[in-house]
Amino acid sequence: MAVSVEESKDGAVIEVTASGKLSREDYGTFVPLLEDRMRQGKVKILFSMQDFTGWDAGALWEDIKFDVRHFGDIERLAMVGDKKWEEGMAWFCKPFTSAKVAYFDQGQIDTARSWLRGE
Image (tube, rainbow, N blue to C red; front, side, top):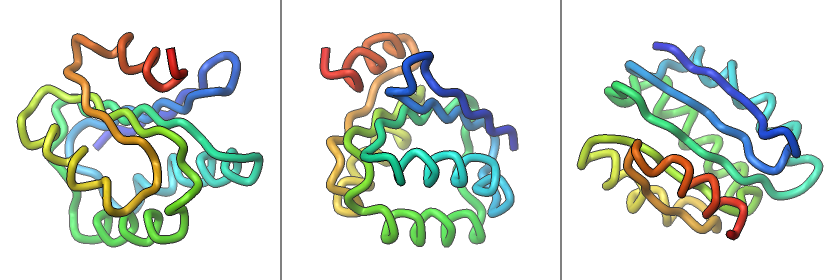
């Protein structure tokens, strides 16, 4: 699994790119940055899935705990992928967050960035 985290130059958007299968350890890569930004206010997240195969059991548990702790801390969540089941994940996430959630295909990543900024 590979996870990378980048902030936009203005700090308005945090982009998390995931490939392969997420593990519990992967959450240690990006959750501290997200939680640090959440202390400053609501965040906007772009979650890009490239050759993504899902979560292992430990990662799924970390994801559930994160969602419960931060139900109201995410303003917008753009999920970007290339598989039908990834689009379904955007709908699956909605009950676990007060954020506006939308799915975009990989070719629409710039549109996702604009949507996150409310453009």
